[in-house]
Length: 439
Image (cartoon, rainbow, N blue to C red; front, side):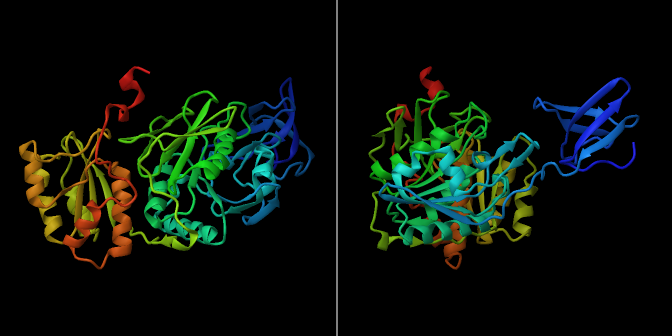
């Protein structure tokens, strides 16, 4: 076969009576070393076993495969009245396939944002795009939460009327909760937006989600961190979910996000782009001068999902590693097996903050009903009310990061205080998921 061509080279492959011409595609760690994948002129990819093939390079480096611009900040001007700051962290919404090369481009500039949503030029006087990260949402850590909170704070103090954060959907709820705890007394909604399907696909949900953001920034009376995503599988409306009360409930549907133990704050209907407030319980907008940042997070908090026959030594492992907070995702009203209670008692005695949430998601923890729950309460485990497990985990990380010098009793009191409406004092039938109503 001779030397292997490089990705981006235009080649002719001759194998028996077969002759193919195309651009060499990049390999991955899973690629077969004996195969060559080329993109044909019709756009299709084809893999060829090249062990007995003849390969001729017709043109070297026809395309720079996978090359993306350096991360940075770009801006464009518009004719609207609001100033917008768009912060990109990665994810499907800012990724698109370059069909000439097959490479996924995770970057976005202000010009590309306007290409996606031309209406932004009419809504905003300036559109500033900061590419902060190019990472998968699973790679976010408490460090990235803190840095993103600081950047968002600076943008708001710098006069931004709308802050939109592009984020991967898989852990978007964690980041939304982190920002909700970090940014106190917001002057405008901070909107996390994502996509289940990339912007180059005809079925993308990215454009409609982005179109809803200026409407929310202009019309919403609340100053909260919200997740802005499709409310149905069709392009009919977008919902603004409270950042501490939302979860991704489906792996691929466009309406994957749902408010849990709460109703969404608002919806934007299309094609009219009309705003409707859905929830009268919200944090009102504050003056920009009142904005406060408490953006430190600890990596010494853990989220443990209980399962039947779970080795309770898992809890001891975290204690031995020096963790200072544990959130349990228990069964039903908030239970784990009795054999684990001694490890949890040890945790509390060593000054570790331990809280109980429920795997059922809907409903709230009540550890006074059954004997196991009462034993957990006696051991010092605190019930997390109706907080989502991930929200409780982020809140614990936030408390340890900002108030870690307080004693355990003081931390317990702070954990049970409602900071960003993460605790709903009452539940109604309409807080249950759509399938509960047969919709």
